[in-house]
Image 1 (tube, one colour):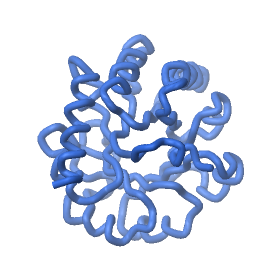
Image 2 (cartoon, helix red, strand yellow):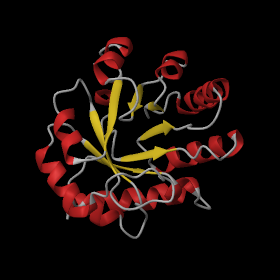
Image 3 (cartoon, helix red, strand yellow):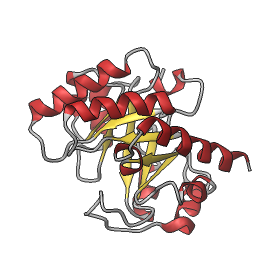
Length: 217
């Protein structure tokens, strides 16, 4: 069974993506507080560090998340995901093909893929994936290689067209998270709104409350 299905609530709902520029001590603090505040999934994202440093950060995150029921996802690197026995892997369009990653991960891990255009969204529907990341909803300083801005209208269209759960990412903060959640996506991924908050626990709790309120309104 997919680890995501072992969680009683929606595992994608409040999806924390870590900031690679924060050191391990801050990383640990952010993850601990964010999970305490209601984060439902954590992705370790490292674009510029060496592989040993990536493994060390992933192992630290796994230790913190042990027993919480919050899945640990590794960005891009299958080898790191396997090394720490993470709950899943998130791929980009230039990473290992999803069928190959699924074959190596096995059927019981979570596998996600970022889609950056309507054409990629359509193609991804036939892939052995558990969810899709919709990037980028709004322009974002943390994602500098943006190829397509979905905006709210594009996100709503994507939700109506996808058989897979969608996680919105890019430029989402406390002042616009409610309108994004109202589009019907399964989850919202955040970096700076939690990682750079003075109190990540309070920030996560407030963001989750907005998501849940929008979903029920």
